[in-house]
Image 1: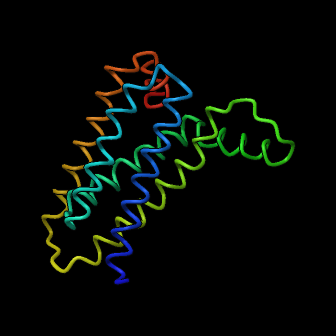
Image 2 (image 1 turned 120 degrees about the vertical axis):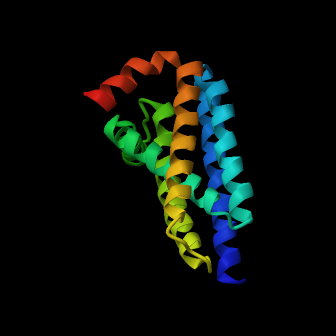
Length: 166
């Protein structure tokens, strides 16, 4: 298989993997079902655009994955997810099963960032103006995510404010 095809396949699998994580999380916590349904559209866009080798797809993938990972490092969600996996592995117990999704989600996003960067670097034509594509795709995808949270998960807004503004 051509290495470009492997990257395409990896990006698709990782995006579908994150959609699966969203579905599992939504199953466990009904208050975020609608949020996660609409959030999955980001990953569908990544799949469609990346299969066309679109810089926009790579920009969306990098920015939303980086945003999610960064936010969830500062919120402690990723750490709590790894802690729960550790408890499960050591003694078969899990105090917060809904946190188990955090660790694989962080790993999937990290791999998605790496694959998207490599896929972009393999593109033949790069321009200085690509920075505007990446900035615009970051602003658009993060704004979309923030709007989803503001509309469908208002209980999370105070915690988000504390994390962002201290």
